[in-house]
Image (cartoon, rainbow, N blue to C red; front, side):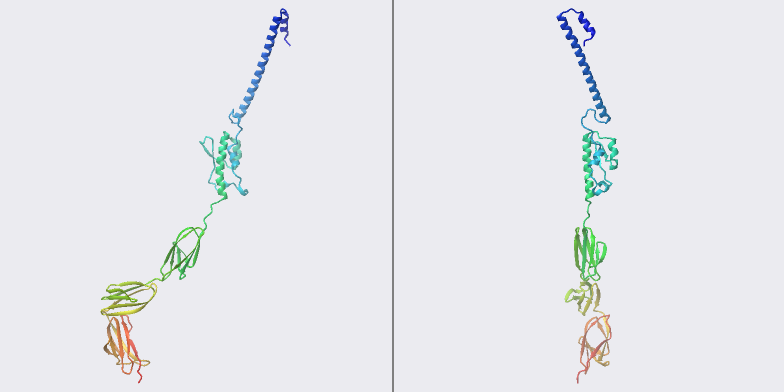
Length: 378
């Protein structure tokens, strides 16, 4: 395969073993050296083409030119994949509370941007992929943490506390029941749908003392309250002129005083006595609940009293003898002037039984006072 010029040159050389031996190896070596250089150039050119193509493709995809990791999913795609599907085929959990928003953070941690809604997922995925796989992982973890609480809130809404119930009874029944500042009815009464807490109960009834209670209610409680209303007391005010003792139900409430004495008494019957050096005034009082009784007994005051007598079942008896406190003062019909207080009056007549009475002389007393005398048997 040698070129003709080389063979002609060899034919002109002298036939010497040494020259021929030297010329042939040199021509073969040069041919081999040129062939290896061409192949190396071709290989380098092919390698440069491949590397350029690889770098161009990665730059076109906005990827690092010499990284070997595959492209990472965009933020919106990771967000959509990590959000749990809606339960029961309804809307996703974040539709319940529109005020809450999700956020994803890039790998540098320097910027926070709201996550796209499901309707924006597809366009966002095609628009801008993340800068690295590490950024995609961070976005996935962030979106998972934000989505989980919303899903739990949707599945487990906050339950309100169970209401309490209160029943109020009174003795006697019929008392007006006031809860706090509100009138809720007459006992017995039941009030429901009460929030847990402290409540002030007031029961009122005419002629009765008000009753007050405080009750603590917890969620779901059913509480019953019973209150007994004591009768409202009667108020008694007495004064002795010029001075004296005040005795109520046998108990001396004041001694030798000219001041008014006020006492509260339960409703009912009470014995009241005022004792002075000038006399004694005693009476029985029937007091009602809440009643106020006031009286001033002036033992220096004198009252005109008329005394008459008549036969039992018959007409008037004139000339009957009248004695006051053991002293004879005249004949019937008789007009007397007596000091305020208690006096013993006796009327007698021949042929008739003697009649004696104790009079409580008071400025408001009714006169005349009539004595009935029964005939004595013959």
